[in-house]
Length: 260
Image (cartoon, rainbow, N blue to C red; front, side, top):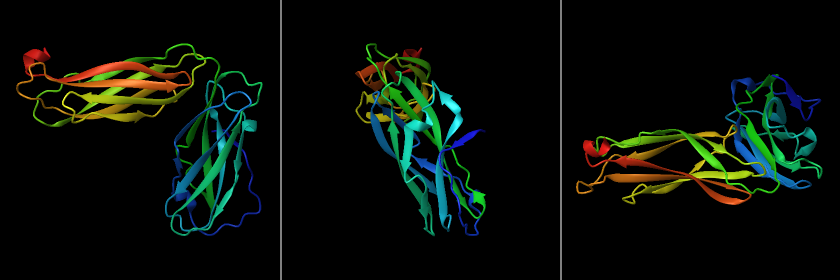
């Protein structure tokens, strides 16, 4: 896989340990920024490696093979420190402050890529892991409501009502209109009995598809003739505001006749 190194390390002395036996983890795993042309945003990226037990050199780079709707040019992104030298003997991590500058002449659109890190010691490299997804949305006027297509929802009926915990799965695809920059996707669960009502975050998908699972109780009151209803509502927030995308209903029926 082709990589573009943003920084080069020279004259490094390594300590004898096999760093390549470990895998890096990233926080956050997903980062999205809305930046106007000529604007700037800053954020931290932390890279961790477990129980390495020696001094470690880090550097970060972009994967030029993973591009969604255009990639942010290297000239947009800088970091300080660009390389972080650690001397921690029981586990280690490195935090870099990323600065993203969008030139004034930048065309509106979505620019995405994957950021990775290298951890090096003893002539070995840690596995770079899954990296961090970075998306920069350069907006223009957002006038349209976004949409969602539900590709799977089930089970719609929860039977038998034996008090067991069941999983309701929701899969779909969001449609983001031109000029709109999504910043948050989430759902609410409204339990008719008020026990399992709540809110959950959905990681904004790279390819606009998503899947999430909600645990619910398969039970209902015996006198509840129309059954127990769980109403699941999906919302998206963009630079226009908050839009309700979809409302779904899972039911614990009173009896099998109601289910049919």
